Length: 366
Image (cartoon, rainbow, N blue to C red):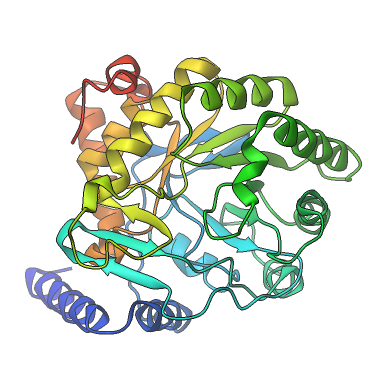
């Protein structure tokens, strides 16, 4: 590619991003999905070998994942992998289709690179996602984020259904019990409820022909005692990993800004310090070997590096792409590769956990 091609592509991407920002947030999201479907988003560069990493038995080309919420219905996991992501998590999917909460339900906070959503697990249900996933190639690493229908009489039964449906297809499964937009869902993080859920998930998995890794996704709004309880329960359960964290109901970091008063979960850059501190605190509770995905507020190579230093093995992002576009993935990959070189490491895994205590005790923020 010559300099003229590079400048042309950068200009086109900037114009496209400006156009998306002028749209309603959900309309812009649908437009991006369609662009990916029709091949209008350029492919990313091959990942440097220094970024290849193993996670939960999976071989990833790089540690950067697309967080769930973007590809809710498993429509564009392959184009996202081609765009540079090391893995893609689709969903959240529920057993039955549901419309979610009334619109408008997604709100940008542009002054802070933040987003508030109260989508409410809007998705087309298990069967639609299953049909799209069943014919996928072996080239992409795809996780499926499973949830419960809002009107379900038994949330645990919905998670069991998710394990049964997607174990044959998914590279890993995530039990999402931390969305603030389904009433009562976060109650599953309480010790007795969590024990029941995780025991049911393990029993269900044991009965499947394919033993798919199962992770748990928690909220950043847990206090110290709640984190103690979650860590103890997780370590006894036999599940394979933890994702820290989902969106926050806190508004401290965006107080007074446009749309900050909307109800729902806050994500994007304003979530970064809280989610990263919780990540480090869970790393200390779970030990150095337990697999952790760090998510919440990543918006640059520096923030991705910090998330790894705070204890993540791999990371995910989504909300920052609303402001920076998909080209941000390549920028982060480049920054990670450069950090490996500058620190004279052999692999990006050498960044994991080098600043856990500082993050856990609040001595670092960015």
